[in-house]
Length: 180
Image 1 (tube, helix red, strand yellow):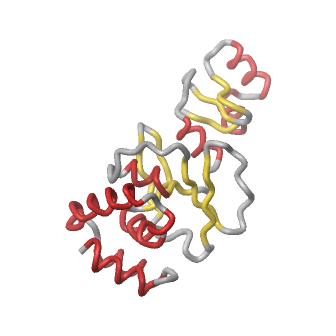
Image 2 (tube, one colour):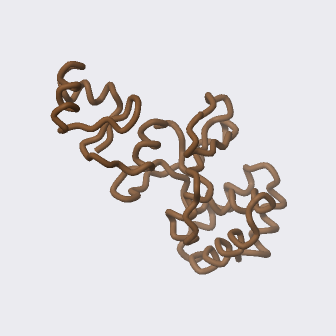
């Protein structure tokens, strides 16, 4: 389990007891302000604990949904457009308009960790919106996998998202031509 410094102090009882727990190796310091009950913690667990208001999106979200087998080099995290810049080399920050940010956020368990991530329907809209900046092979692989699961998706939700996002006509057209 991963803890922030504040949570680790609360669990230990005091900052002194936390330092003792780290010395006794009952808790492990992963990086500044992040502690864990395991000696080695996954990057995803540390990043999601470090940035609790961020939402997993982009290539790592497609990978976690099984829509691609390409393991991304960085974790794509969506934040509101007024959020402070994330200066973590493992993270690519994606700024999202405040009104669009909360749409489609779900909590999913990935490798035993609770993670805030956009649902598959929102990720399809993101894919269609960003197809010109993605690698063509990756885009095609994900589109093909979406075609296979289209009956498992909530079509009304996709249509709702498509109508709200900028470029809604382009998204609807791409949805009809490439996925349906």
